[in-house]
Image (cartoon, rainbow, N blue to C red; front, side):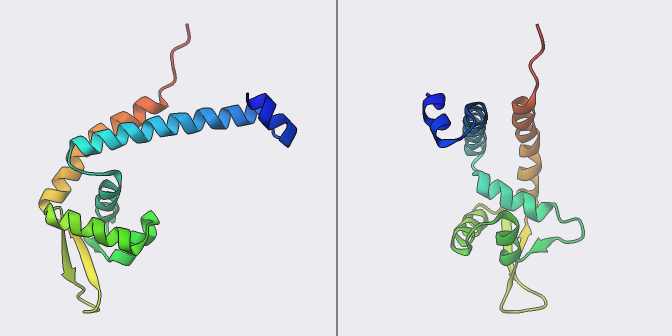
Length: 136
């Protein structure tokens, strides 16, 4: 099938097949991660927000704009996500110390613990995806 469609378009069928296989593996990985996070009351986006805040070694908080830029999402989507995380007591929003019009987003102790509890399973899923099968 790939040969029939790709070759007339000037595309290398082997490269196209490789890309399709990669897309399939990525789709399966995303579904595994979605299931893992759902089983723990989170989504990939909520997990990413937690990890982006936690990974800042010199800081304990980020502004919503900084979070949106780091994970490349729209402000309305981030706003809904932050509200949900705050409802679940995983983050706390506070007025900025330097600009009262801005907010700072902090991980709560519960949020930090939830993130750290999820990391081993998360890395296990990612590691399993990249394992090289043993040669026969």
